[in-house]
Amino acid sequence: MSAVSEQQAPSPAEPRKGLSPRKKQRISRAVQYAVLVVILVVLAALADWKAIGESFLNLDVAGKGLPDLFTVALRNTVIYTLSGFALGFVLGLVLALMRLSSVAPYRWLSVTYIEIFRGLPILLIFLMIGSLPLAFPGFELPGGVYGSAALGLGVVSAAYMAENFRAGIQAVPKGQMEAARSLGMPHMRAMISIIIPQAIRIVLPPLTNQLVMLLKDSSLVLILGVTAAQVELAKFGNDQSSTYANPTPILATGLTYLLITIPLGYVARRMEARQGAGR
Amino acid sequence: MSTVEIKNLHKSFGTLEVLRGIDFTVESGQVVCVIGPSGSGKSTLLRCVNLLEQPTSGTVVVDGVDLTDPDVDIDAARRHVGMVFQQFNLFPHLTVRRNVTIAQERVLKRRKDECDRVARENLEKVGLLEKIDAYPPQLSGGQQQRVAIARALAMNPSLMLFDEPTSALDPELVGDVLSVMRKLAEDGMTMLVVTHEMGFAREVADRVVFMDGGVIVEDGPPQQVIADPRHERTREFLSRVLHPGV
Image 1 (cartoon, each protein chain N blue to C red):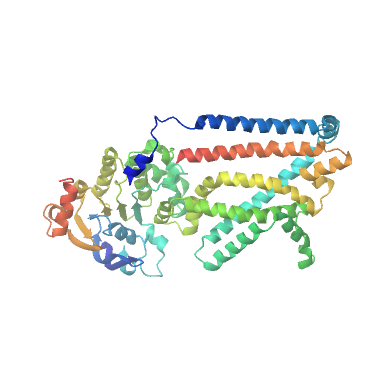
Image 2: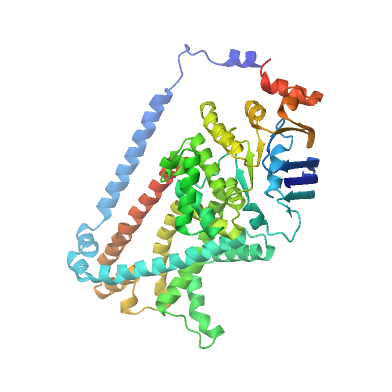
């Protein structure tokens, strides 16, 4: 069989027909650059540069948003995000432990929860939280909008974090639990002192990405109906741009998000790389 | 009184029967080495002694407590049985000091200064007191294994189990670990050691047990089992271990 294919293979000395692969590659790359340049030129020609400068880069309008952009809107965004993250962290850890429990109903409950809350949009969760008083008359979440935001963001991120924690716990070598048990530690004690601290280290990068997702999702808090003091970044930008009939505040808000999300993403990648190297 | 008394022990993993009727005792102060080819069930036997594996049937009595009795507090029983693993299994996120104190503190409820004193004493014993503030990944395999021995000793065990303690070590690091174990034996510790170190078994063990196919084939003093085995299977195994490549 190999003898036949050897005979059919063209000898390297034979001159090639048409373009060489390297030449083809060079032409293809030139075409790609050309397409890019054409698109940019067309966009630049179509855009109204004066209007763009006035609408999107209007420093007067941007200045009017200060310092509230940071002292109110960013502050609230951070509060909503961190409180949701804290709730999600705790609830997610509990769900992960339930998921790994030897008691079957706990596992079912956990799986059901995770499937439901990973499958629903956060917007819908917020709408449901708004309707909670209908089911439980007189019920009021502590903290008002802040409580509702933490609950909504928390219950959804818990579902994602539970899966992260489960993977982290399972990634801790089996010998760690055996060593802890052989020292006489009960199962739960070993989980808390030995397994979970190691699992959290393992899942720090995905948890950081989770934090970034949550930061962006916190923009949906606006559906809860917030006052001027409770406003977060996205609504703040939208309100300001309506007030001044100018989209610059939306751009400023976007930059403020990036101010946080880009460094966080960088930190997560660094941690990932370090873990990879440590192994 | 016997420290370990095992009667008619069976252990199956699914349809695979790993232990097929083991009867076996370890007297207080004895050093017993278990040898045998891989898959012979020697590690499983060891792991049944502190119930890291649940026996399928039979009884395991340690210090007069029947571990197979469902009413027995297994955590309490394990406190007095130290275990040293092939892969060390130190807690990598904790310092050496914390590795040696955490179970004393959480399980034995010793006072903090007492925990620290015991930790220092046992680290001194294994010659690693100067590494007390290091983290396990900063130590060599041999050092990690000696810390693991100190961690087990800190619980004042009446019995120490060693599951191939030198098999994961670079050859030049084996000696340090064996000399710590030898010292332990001289101090009168009751030890059950699964090992491939025939030299150690010959010099330190009071008894050598040869296992094959889930049963004990031969059990006796080392000068008999290693130097003058009665069974063909023992002879065959020993010739392979003692003269590899011949």
